[in-house]
Image (cartoon, rainbow, N blue to C red):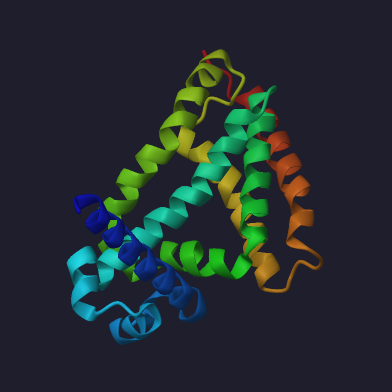
Length: 208
């Protein structure tokens, strides 16, 4: 009986999250309304509050799930690369673009708009905890490369910003119509730009 209740609870949660995700992709997170979520999911208002506590609770789970998927993918690209760590960071930038290219509208609604929202400003602790969790494997990978000089001796957050910032700006310009063609075509360009830039910085920011 307990397993049946747990399974039913999990199914209800997933139904709500799937419906909320669809609505946020269509309308944006600021326009998410409980009445629309109840209608789309078929789950009662009371049940939604029982499982998530509030609309913000639903948004929090969507944010965490999507951000973990995005940054987790970038981290996997970096960690799986064999060779020069500067090239690995370039592969991470390419991975960020290719992830967004799978569904640009989804990424825009569920990552980009969240990143610049009042909601995230109010929920900053969620992001800080999640960032530590996701970034830890890459940080551990980077430490010996920083110590040996194979990565430029810069703050890890600076290196991350150079990598993700380049990729995300390219995606922004593509969404704005200022970069023609397919978004995927920009991935190798970003990889080359990030890797070359870090290699140049490596020569001027050596340890010791």
